[in-house]
Length: 306
Image 1 (tube, rainbow, N blue to C red):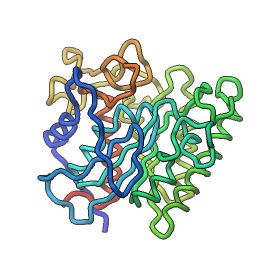
Image 2 (tube, rainbow, N blue to C red):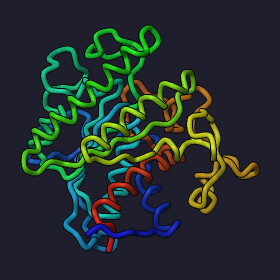
Image 3 (cartoon, rainbow, N blue to C red):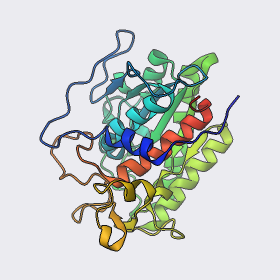
């Protein structure tokens, strides 16, 4: 039976802040599972030795796939899921990707290697949840989109995106067999240049989840101003967690916090961008907010902490 759950502001902040590493340190090589293929750019994280209050259900296995937004959030999400439900957690995000990159059968037209394809990892790990975090590659960066871009052909782009969402769902379901994982479609924050694009991409996610009996996590709402769901903003009012922790309320005099760097309107990590993609190394409210909403949805569906 699924039950509602609550966490204190202090506990949530402690769990999320614990995921942030020293910005001077490059992320270490992730451990791998003997039973699973070795994913490149993958973090595979087991429950902590001394977890928070034990959940009343079997700890879920969670697989996290996505683009650069997932790369920067992967450690925060993993640590929060382990804290709340002792999740067995694997992350295999790749920067610059979109849904088609994780499809099997794309051959060399993909930025994701065969060992990290969604269906391959589902067969190996047998997850209870597959979290999909994609902002929606709109400019033809990945070859698997066959040159289709939102700017040149918006309707064709959206049709292709919906078709890929359906194919990815089917491949994940088939790989899961009689233990089909639930997919968590992460709704995205605003596009600073074309707000309607993200609104329509989110609609694709919502319709796909409804058609397949899956879940949505509206992480995008957590990084928008109240009453302005599809309006991009660099700042939002500090929430209770951020007010309680000065590092997270970046402009306390105005009661607001920064979601983006001045030179990067897309990503939420407040550390400078590096040539090699990495988990966000500094406390960043946008990362914490989005990861927190994903963890909330998975935790509630899994039964919540005891």
